[in-house]
Amino acid sequence: MNGKFGVILFGAATLALAGCSAAPAESGADGQAQAPLKVIQLSEGHSVEFYRVGDAIVVSEVGKLGTPSVIEAKGLKGAAPAKIFAALAPNEPILPELLAESVGDVPAGEVAAEASSSEAKSFSGDVAQVKQAVTSSDFLASGVCNYTFTQLVFKDCRTNWSNGYFAYATAKNSYFSVASASGAFQVELRQNGGTPFIYPVVNNQWRTISSIWGGSGVVQHRWDITQASGNTFHVSDYFYNGNYVP
Image 1: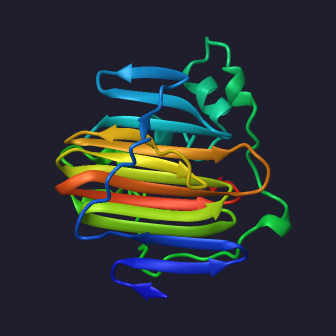
Image 2 (image 1 turned 90 degrees about the vertical axis):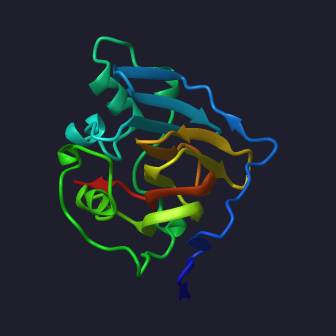
């Protein structure tokens, strides 16, 4: 069932939903800012952060508008966290926590039916070409709405979205991108309805977050943008059981 404010897709043991309400969702009282395992500082205001969230490894890159993504430039989008760490910090030992996760196709019996949002659109471009505050055209031209992942469960792309947002699906992994068009807000990640972990986004900033599930089977990943009343942003997300295809 497709609608203006949401898309619901049913597959094998799968529910995927994306949407927004007139008022932003509030953070749960038990929400918390997650302390990273490691932060690799690339330049002022530009870093890559590694987190352990339950049985998942989360890699987040954050930068100022106009700063190109180093993960994108090095062809590391959707790569195993240990590979990303080794590429960005070649002289440091890889964190043992990053070696624990499994990345790759899950058994066929656990693969949800492949589906995609009818509202997702295809564009091409290079995020490194963005030189000023991100407009909807910039966001679409960066290609974030046109990534390819194997065993895709659900994807969504929204530009000039305001007040709040959510998307969730049951899958092995998820990839989330957001850019502030105006104002600050926070991104919340929940797995199987647990405690939300919070990642801030300030005005004139973008953030990508990759959640790689290291446990057995699949898990419900849920992304929320909250504390965004009156603010505008662009967002895309993917839920998948396989790997990124360059």
